[in-house]
Image 1 (cartoon, one colour):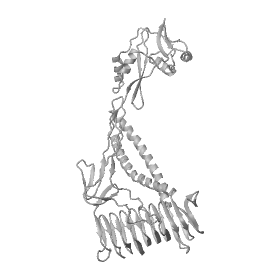
Image 2 (cartoon, one colour):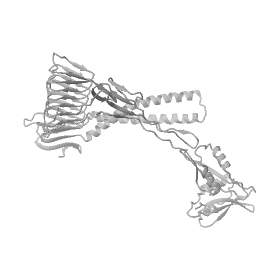
Image 3 (cartoon, helix red, strand yellow):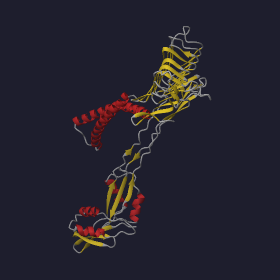
Image 4 (tube, one colour):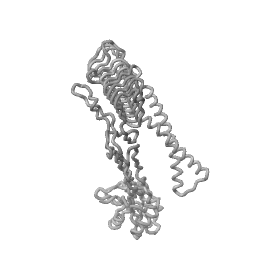
Length: 531
């Protein structure tokens, strides 16, 4: 295969351009390339239409007069084109006229050096051209080296970091609160987590010899609290004690368990403990239990205050007497909840909820022998599942799921502000990059301009850092909104009149008894879609 190419010739007093046709499917010439070559040789006395017609002729040789011959032979020449990303150099060669000097390897290397190309030069390609000269043909004569991107660090955990596991359910539908398997028990010497360090990758280089850095990788380190040791390489952490492992806000905690052998009453007093608490009896009225770990209560919670950064498990139930409060950072699991206020950062699971105010970020699930919600207000971010909602007595009961309208408006406001600030940062970045390019060339800036750029760079960094919390909040609300679209209320047996359903900003009053219903937000209203 041979591309169409041209060669300067002298015919008498005329300088002519001899155009050779392509062979075996070779590429045709571009008129712009030919005219640029002639202009570089000071030949401009030609008929452009005649030249164009000669180039368009792919069948035979053509000769076009382009000016007066000056009697000097034309050297073989090379045109160098560097790609925009500076990773490739393409050379095209043009033949000499009769008696013109041909290029040698040293001439090509010298010309590349003149254009500051010094990395990735392929000498085999140069050799190929010198041995088999093809003109008006693209030779890839130099290639840069792409960077090898590394990997972010990651941490492998060897205990349960997912606190949303459901308790074991018996064949009759009841929940076995003695076999919850939601606590991560560890023993002294147990491996808790292993750090796989980041791989920084390898830099690349463009054809000008400039280093190309790989993308920035995210390093991590093991974060941990008391009762934990770390190896010399700081890549593994181990428990020093037997207790419970917890994962909270990126940090691993191991706590000894504080056990109360009987009731929390006057004999014990209020409890506040940095770890997990196990209570073998009841929490009596008027007392409080606070823990940074999980709280497990074998008996009943009366009119008391119980607060945990982890889970609260009440194996017999909650009888709050309209004053009892439970607040958990994770989940709340209880046999029943009656006349109490409950807040859970995860889910709430019970066999019955009566006349209570219950809120969960995730789900509220009420199943078992009774499977009843009657009276009060039950709120959940994602879903409520219950067997019986309300009773024939028509007790006023409210079931709410989804994101609040105020949160949705907050998302819209944040979106506008983030877009506005992002545009400001982009404008600032363009200015900074322009000045950086000037300095990179070795040029100097006046003191006032240099001070302006420095202040602008500082302001850019501060504004970028200030924007990140807003973006984080937007992402968090976006997750809530996505969950809201999937939110539902499921009644697996019967829902009675007197129950009010709320999904985000919509309400539905139940006026007739219904069986086996699933309610979702569709087409601007709450609809029963069935199972």
